[in-house]
Length: 319
Image 1 (spheres, rainbow, N blue to C red):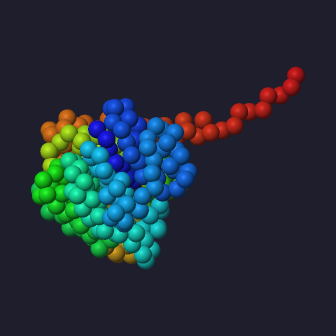
Image 2 (tube, one colour):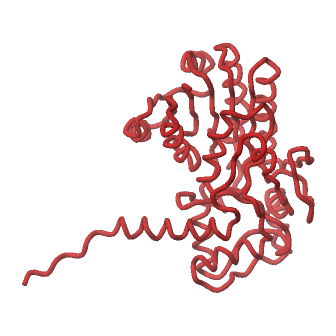
Image 3 (cartoon, rainbow, N blue to C red):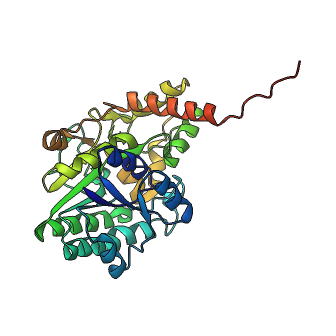
């Protein structure tokens, strides 16, 4: 297939690119800077710079493609940054306006398939119950535009194409700024994750999210959860990271601190035990890491290996 990929240099997109190439697909990847386009070109992809808010430019770029994969986002790079005024404005614009423009162009160009990333943690609190794709969603003010992006993909299906929505659980991995920030906190004995220690937190590694994107090229239209097999309770989640780091279990924030975080903190405090059964059944997808226990261990090991590789060799002493 010839695939047009936005968000190709993001934490998931960077993993998707080599997987598509290994499967024999030809990829047209969007890079916003010369450096990013050069890196994509070295990876063997056709790298272009296209304004996702320019309908004519997008339409020209889509000509001749078999699928569009929209992973474009603008997520704040720190937990503190998420709470700043205007932090989500550009992400809203991408999900609300760019997704609409991309779908319009894909329909006009006769692209058969459109894949849209989304956010699984906007499901309503379900306590101990498993959540499938029919569960009610309760987006917060900062991520209501996610619903707009999903609506665009659904409109693509109504127009005769195959629109697929991938609702990613909490993403983490060795190249994720937010994961690296959490690792730093846990090393210091704290884990600033709101919510009850017994509430479920669903997650998925960037690597497993990337394989789900490739799987989405062959599934029927619809919404699919992308989460690991065994969501952990918050206490278990942070303790799994602490064990991987070989440090003491961190302290979770007190309940009263959640009030300071507003709607974002309240959303992140929900108990969401998300099921991936639909994607497993439709496309044969399975995460490499069944839970965060294995995922955090692999993440910490990857960070350690990368750190060792980056160290300059010790100077040899002349004898």
